[in-house]
Length: 112
Image (cartoon, one colour):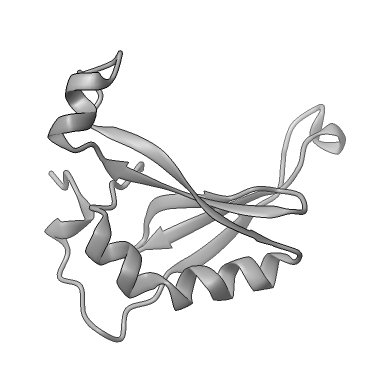
């Protein structure tokens, strides 16, 4: 079982991929598109559906987080980057530009 993105072999040529899912069902006209950030086919983050586009990732908690958190049984937390983009493409480009920094500072946690 894959417990973190570090179980994958990261290389210098890796980049995030992105998937936009359209809403379905009876009330789809009231829902927004979902923009997911993926790495090796696993969802590791998301981009907010409307401007300003905010980028968030799921990462493993540190030992300090586990002690101070009200839910110590959950191994991951969601972080949001400070950067707010005006377009969806700008947010995607920024996420890929920051790939090395994000993967060195945090242990990405795949959701699916």
